[in-house]
Length: 200
Image (spheres, rainbow, N blue to C red):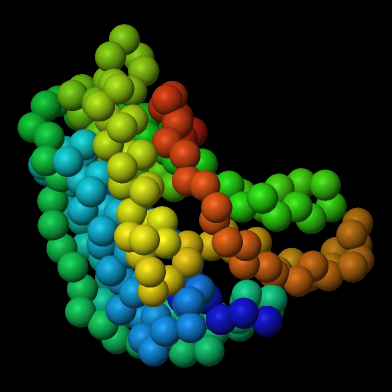
């Protein structure tokens, strides 16, 4: 069992809002992982906010939820100062379904499949698009933001992908424990994600 720390960021002020992002961290044997998790989250979204619409309000929420990775059981919540800022682009907005994304690789395999995740960046403008693909500067900006999760930039906490626990079912009667796997590479994609749930 590993304790993991969940941060939540909410995005408002643009079409398709609100958007939500949850990130999960484990501590690196430091005294206060709550501040570390909040700081790592703020550093990421501050870095990539330059590619987002200036109509978008970004707020990292003022509480950190503590969970057990294997059961998903909440162990508590700690209040911490929130952080609020906005995007930096003034161009016309892209469709809400069109977002930047980064792949989170762990190198941890269970049942022959790698535990991996993604981070999506909403509220984009035409400044980040060139002939239907992300501009090189937008991709670089996202990669730079991803690099804020590296050990040297975020020494207090480790970003993880959380594979949630799952109860047994009729088709698959064996329950599955949750697992937090360390992210060893966060890679910005050179293509847009198209989120079907955000299509109008």
